[in-house]
Length: 174
Image 1 (cartoon, rainbow, N blue to C red):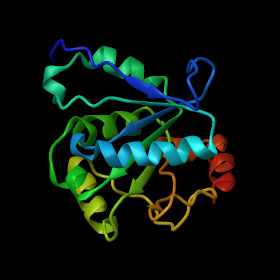
Image 2 (spheres, one colour):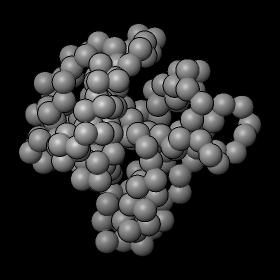
Image 3 (cartoon, rainbow, N blue to C red):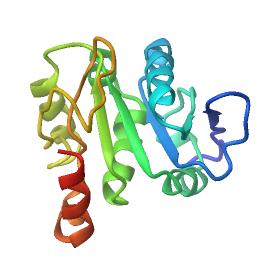
């Protein structure tokens, strides 16, 4: 484990503090920053939340994972920008952030920015850890229609599926 501290940036509606807003974390391949920014704009148009992200291209061995993990545990939703870049290349986002989120039961919302990635996503993420690629495909998730993108359903980590809260939340987002 390294000692580099990852600094998060945030975006909110207007020029306000993120204090008191729900925290949404965006995970993406470093080369997809422009795509991430477009989706953040769409999300902020429909939801008053604080979107947190980082643009660091370090690997897990180089960073302070305890500090990074403490920051990620504060997030209420984990948005993954799924692209060919994300799936084809090793990155902190794919190799560590996604697994951390699954293990800590943070709901995941994968947003594909290219068509035809469902099977590639399932295969690649299950290669990282069995079960990580098991999400249901949906054209639209909880009323979001993000211009020219398609959104998969929220992926709830397996341990979360056994509690009554998961059943309540899942029925709300169908």
